[in-house]
Image (cartoon, rainbow, N blue to C red):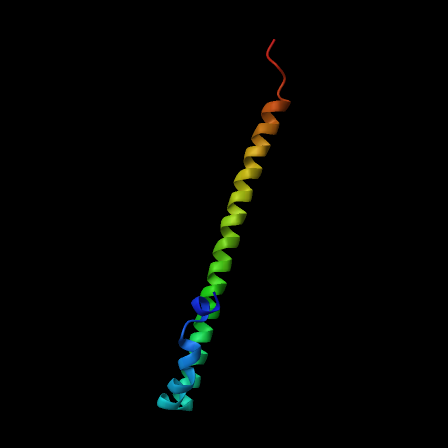
Length: 75
């Protein structure tokens, strides 16, 4: 399971650092970490917005059903 998540990138990282150099490697990893953080943040915000929308619709449906159940019966 760990190998599927991390992949072979963790094993080849030292060779990639040696081939590209410290400045390029650290700057690229920093950029990729920032992009990963941003995409994770966007996904969390999208999930929160979808959850809020579902709760809003559910609350509206409950209010409508409450209003219908409180209406007096026709004579």
